[in-house]
Length: 255
Image (cartoon, rainbow, N blue to C red; front, side):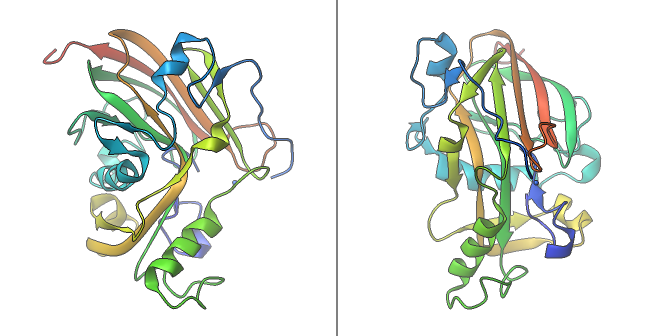
């Protein structure tokens, strides 16, 4: 996720999902269709782009997830969590948020209450005003929101410049580039907090903010143990640069 100035963009990519070159795209053959088609039972768990879950769209959830992620400082941040110890922090509502990393592959265990949807980015970027206004090549645009949207679009890699992979219960999910999504039109208010303060920003609300990337929304998983792995390969050398292998234990509520 792009959080910092252009010269330190490695920390700025919401590799929360992940954090950017030359081999073919990571194609997964014979796996689940990300759009929810196909015969595998897991495929019906993935919410299609443009659809909602619990009356929440991808666009709405992107802004909510962005504000969720930045609440904790690095010490307890889900994005820097080495094993999943902090995945429960600040979880509200019917959708459970998961974070990626700021580089490298993490192994995390997380308990998720039964009946919760699950939302996360394979990788994503964020840009906000006024810090990222007047950036080349977007400085010629007149409206602030247009500049911010241009800036985040400029940072979000598309095929064939990035490889994406997502496995649900060991089954690879295909068509991941169909899951590119952006926060709501007009931008959202980014409630910059503890995490960004440690990156050198002054806390407080930022508007407009725009987040873009590749996001997955899952319907509630059955009670029991599930594996969920996602990664992004930014130099397309076949070696993931960022991602997480999650073991999710779906438990009864109040357990």
